[in-house]
Length: 399
Length: 222
Image (cartoon, rainbow over all chains, first blue to last red; front, top):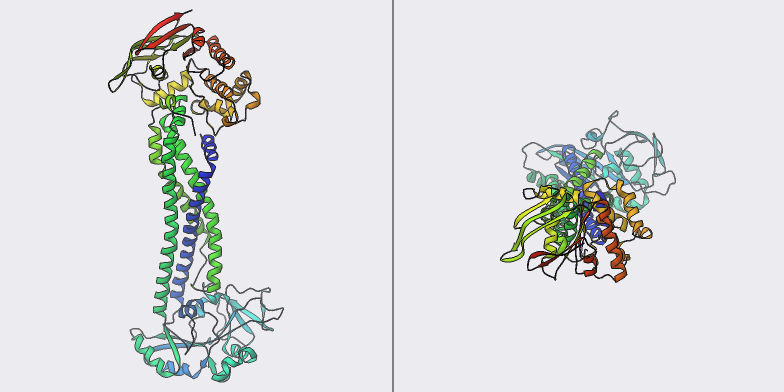
């Protein structure tokens, strides 16, 4: 019977391929969106758990999308006076603050890491942002030749890394965060400032604000429990030219955006699959009619109605299974492509889904769509099983 | 001599049209029976009833002494696979299969098809088609299709062979060849029923019946 199914599908290969392709496209979209959704959900959940900042303050006039700063941590070479830190700390309702200083590692040095990475100078004495991501914190303060690497910073040696022509000792590697913190180099505040001071291309950026030793890039703020966050924001704006961003609003907005994205793309995928299944149903419904004489012939040979049903359902399931497997392969490629796109635009925090999740999802999708394919052929199969065998004596030529 | 197939007082009506009326008939082992009659006279309906492809409105059908009246569709299918071989009016080959696969098709549902491959090849060789084993029906002539159809019907060595207009559309030489193959099946004890317009073919059968106005009359006997 398997042979008969195989031969029949080959005989109608163009129709079979058309349905396989349409199922594959739908499955690919569903699979890749599912994997992306899991990765982004995990990333956002992790960010919520570990990024304790209620307010992120950047220099006034910074035009970067707040979500990029908050989740993506986009490179922002913009600065404000470090005296703002004390001013913000004294605002009623502010529980704690920690400043950070940003620059990047772009260089042509042949020993250097080959990509542009954000360099974050942070104050380890009052930091609560970086610390939760460190696997082993064995130092409270970094010296000027020490660096902590983000999880995805490429290195060629175990203990040292060259950045902008200077060799740093690697203290540890941070856990994967799903943000550009994974591609960042964490150094002491002093060291980050020294790097900026040496970089002539950045001079025009900091010159108006004063020497780098007196500047910071951002202040991360935690507010007291029950404090009116809007009142705190207003007070912060009175401290100096700063742009406070309320993290909860950004997190909500990005979560909403992502949900819409998932519904739109995932919906398109599901619709494609449903359309393919309807197509499958329609094809087998029509085929059952067209192939009545063939079924009649099998019945004359001694086949039972159940045999005919098995042939019809088997053909549908084979098409759906092939489409699902092809879709998973296609979906793997789509997922990788989407991941690269997301990394390039750093639009959402992302944590790579585990292989077990991917495997379970792939198996689930295969089983679901193969089952639905077989189900789509159920009615045609039922009709096929009840065909009057004498039809073989009266019908025209076979297809 | 035991009867392979027996019809007793068979009637068949569609709505109010009487197609077959009080037909009784027996097919002994190793005999060939021809049924002639004009088009639309109910020959194909009668053959369908003999082939257990449809049930009569009333009357009794016995296959090897077994009354089929109370059998369900599944039991009838089993009986067809066990006792019957068909040669249809048109060759009725499956276009997705090769000549050899078409011949082996009846075995798919009743036994292990791999075991019948040598027999299928031998039959095709016997019919002069050993060089066409792997050709699809679309690549073969009408005569070749008919011979493949005949080989398919004979593959499982059926006790009863039913042929519906087997020489229709064939030139005299080919018709003679097909008729020879059909009638040769008697030698192994197969009972053959041939529905035909071909008077020459009917004359070679052991008995000839005419189906007229729904009734079957014996018109010739050898």
